[in-house]
Length: 149
Ligand SMILES: CC(C)(COP(=O)(O)OP(=O)(O)OC[C@H]1O[C@@H](n2cnc3c(N)ncnc32)[C@H](O)[C@@H]1OP(=O)(O)O)[C@@H](O)C(=O)NCCC(=O)NCCS
Image (cartoon, rainbow, N blue to C red; front, side, top):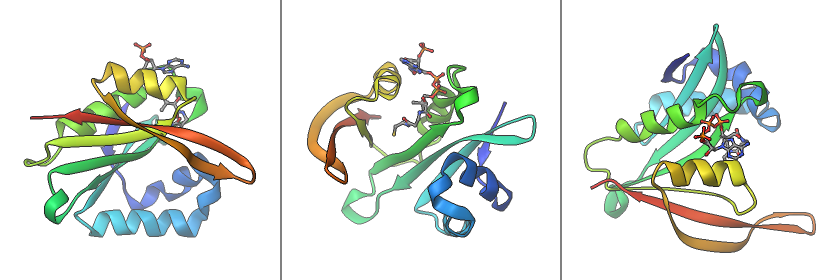
């Protein structure tokens, strides 16, 4: 497995991971990441195929000591092999100097993600009721932080 920064050629793989993005949006997101120093996307590649993704947003101004992790996903057929753990460890180990706090969140009923985050030392610091809404259905989010220094 190779872990590397995202490249333009990852667009179609990103659409497989996030079908609702569509090719154009995936490309725009990748281009923005490649041009803009405020964010990073790391992907995992196996046998030439991009099979996992995570995004890191670096804060600015009075938030420049905080990074937020989003959009962690591993293709279904590659789950349970330590790929998400490896992606997050790389993201955390390679945080720019000056990042003191890393945050992320997930739906309260996402047991795999919560277990992963807690194993990596993230602590729950909040709970947002009804953070997610689709039609009449709501879901809560658990908010996590990890203090680096
Ligand atoms: C959550 C997700 C990213 C985990 O990816 P993964 O590569 O399968 O995870 P890993 O193999 O690195 O597992 C690391 C830890 O996560 C937890 N975990 C992973 N799959 C799990 C499962 N099915 N049930 C319970 N815990 C699980 C375990 O604590 C595991 O540690 P262990 O190997 O010591 O048991 C993956 O299931 C996924 O893409 N889900 C859909 C998208 C999503 O929920 N993203 C995160 C929310 S923002």
